[in-house]
Image (tube, one colour):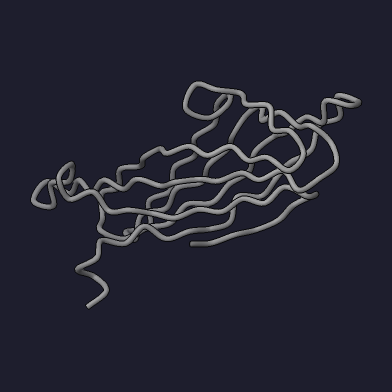
Amino acid sequence: MVTTITEGVKVSIETIYQPEYSNPANDHFMFAYRVNIENMSNYAIQLISRHWYIFDSNGAKREVEGEGVVGQQPVIEPGHAHEYVSGCNLKTDMGSMKGEYQMTRLLDNSSFNVQIPEFYLIAPYRMN
């Protein structure tokens, strides 16, 4: 699990290789990742959008941007967390992701970015 804290918002991520949805013979490797976003600040916040950078070990790079996460723009009260699971397919059995969330403080509607730490997507058989 990797973790980072930006402006009182803690982002923790763990990854899971999904062999049942992967097809290595066709260069298709599926990974799931669980994200926990904890509001350690004194103010309610709302996740507005995300921006991901996705890297395959063959040098390919993709960017994905969009509103919210898995169809939601959650409000996270102080001391609370929001957790979700999403997925990413790669053309190689190793890669990485990183990015940022755009958040809004509900007290004054100010926007700020929260860093998503870089995490690695690695098929378990590569670890041996």
